[in-house]
Amino acid sequence: MIERRKFIRTKGQVVMLERRKYIRVMESAPIEVVRSGKAAAKGDLLDLSLRGLRMVSGAAFKRGDKLQMSFKLSPDLDMNLVAVVRHNYPWKGQTIYGLEFFIRDLTDLREHIKLNKFIMQERVRQDKLLRQQIQKEKK
Image (cartoon, rainbow, N blue to C red; front, top):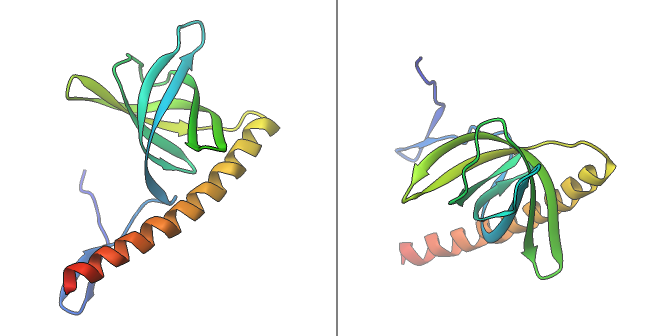
């Protein structure tokens, strides 16, 4: 299968356009994951979007596993979300997992609303830092 990417040309540079449907922010936080009937496992959050997250863990999950996740995005923002494992690949003796969130009920919907607000605020902050870094490198 040939992957088709969209490119734009600006001031002589070719830039690949972002193809993701959801804004993704880089985020690092410990995460606790529970699979039905199993003991809690630990992991580390790598990035986050309204649709899902990437995490690294030494725990063994399979594609299709449904997981209950708990993590803290700030001192006053606890998240409790449900997701399904969509992909995994080995990395430095552990596994990186791609998880997709799903909404089961009103409680899950409230968590997604909190997550959306956090992602929008964090994206503004990360974009500002990136612009500052680019300006610094131009000097």
